[in-house]
Length: 493
Image 1 (cartoon, rainbow, N blue to C red):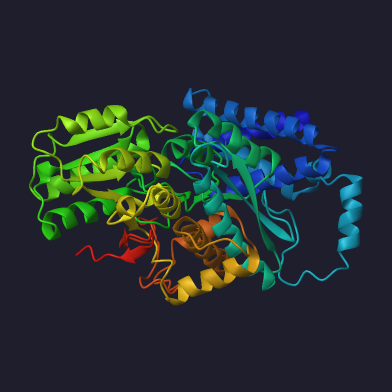
Image 2: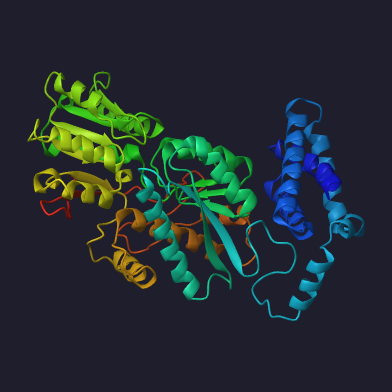
């Protein structure tokens, strides 16, 4: 098997480096060989070793094309030879299933498989389940974001599984903790891909962590769906084929709130500052504010940016900058996580009683409200959060369905904006899987997603994708906390 991996891998790699070679041809062989590795391995360590050997060989093949040692005509010819070998008796006997797997297959042959095709299945898919992975913070100061996102996805998965799954397959979610630290994200992604053998990624949390996770997913042509971030690195033009977003972008959220502050609250642009995390998440939000300024014909060069370090609540430098700002700042657009945002509000509320605070949805609305409620009514009242899902206190069909499912599968868990987003994103994915049919693979699912139009999940806005549009929703909902710490609807226009 190790020798075979060393011979098949370079052919796959060289084909991957050639844009004119159809991706489904390559993916078919990758999926077959992945299945062979799984069946031929007697334990997890052996499977991991064979997979790494195969991945190294694939990388060698790509390097052979990029360095000019092999041209794409030869790469295509080698791939065609390999396709014929797998279809015929010569190689199929070599890469056939192990005796134990063959016996299992023989026993299963008598069982009904009405909707599921025979033959090798893609990574992460069996006759009984489809595996997805989420890399998110389940430890550290942002752990509630990861917990809630996972909760929402699992609520949607449980609901569809209770109804018999999709074509008889159950959806299963595997989780890996990266602590909202990019230095840990690669290991988390490897755990999901190599150990848990997931079919795709859904609901990853964070911008700086996505900056690490996306290249890993793209290199393996693995679906990266519904991440909890509005950053532009997931919204390339044209879009990356394997990256799909449910939610509106940070640029759209900050544009909506800046226009609200200027047009409804009658502030001058120079009276608006940005309090942002000092990384790509904060950069994405700040860029959205700057873009909103430019669209209104205002110079964005003088915007005051206040900052803090990720996974800390050290806001003192930001407050010192705010104190010396001229003219005095009257509103702060916050691109932060809930603990840092709450600490900033706590330390500035007495200094600036009339300050308007707004937050983007990534802050973690419920967690922010809980932090502020501990401080007292004057800290909660009027704090704005832009949302990418409807109010969880509302009575739309989507929200009622979500709350009923949450109460059924996770009794005692309170409705939350983050878990609602996870629930909605998972349901968009579920619709795509249903439409793709039982012969599911990554390329077919992506082709199906790109044809989804006018999907109505009861949100009050229709969702959809296209070949040049991998973001399902552009809708922004406004909310503001009252004195009791509850979110009320806020009309931003």
